[in-house]
Length: 341
Image 1: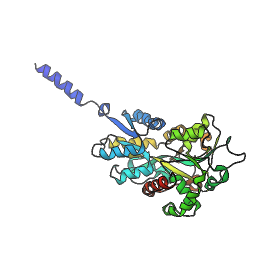
Image 2: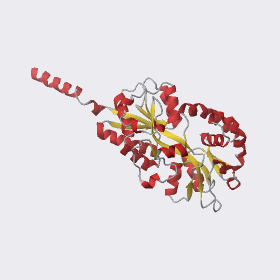
Image 3: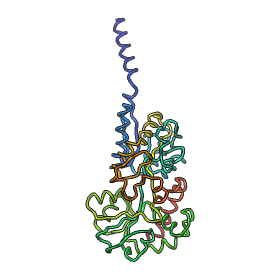
Image 4: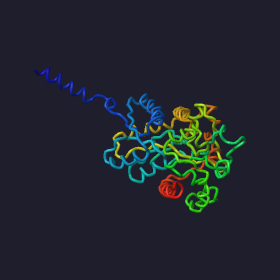
């Protein structure tokens, strides 16, 4: 009997002493589709280094923010992948942990745009910029400035996103020689754009359909979508206007009250590793945040791929996240009322 109890005791002890990582998993909140696949590049390397499995929960940008607010005391994810200006809303609502940057060994090598403050860090950048069908626009048509969207050849051919009017409002502000915070000065110019607009798109899929079928051969588009279409044989040109392209930043933050704080920091640090940066950017056709990342020459030469400090200074329009987050709902309300009706 005594040996039986000893055996049972050893079995219980063995169970309780099993490595925590065998039971643990890191949960990452991210968009679906290819965005989840991009996050999985990080996750695969993270699991390889730590033995901790990664689980992904997916959803739209604002849907995931709403869920995070409801589950603030018991978050369903440990790490959140979102746009940096929406990340500001997370941190402003107390949903992100303050980062311990001493645990991010790759942070020191980032471009300035990668530093998004105390609560999130940029992993890659993308741009929204004018894109046009070279086979459907007049011969010799070019977009050298955002002002070219107001030109006669574009009338009745332009599509814009309805969910985020920030790109065209920022561009109009630039053309009006004011900062985006003084955007109301650009309202007369924005209203003059209405004859150019044929459609508004609601999603990446709609954007690609409108462009691919030629209904709107000019579009303010996420260049990642443009590259996807060009790989399918669509004849298109991405323009970087002389005023610059509007940059968005994919960022990571750690959910407040996570029980996986150390692992979450490690996941973020791995996302900033030069080799992982290279893999992410080759996959998404986006720009790395680590200055030591060496993307392929084929990727580096593409419009909107920033790999030097000079490109960041001359080709990128980057707004502070707090400014962007506060202005976006105001812009959307005005845009819906005045530009879409």
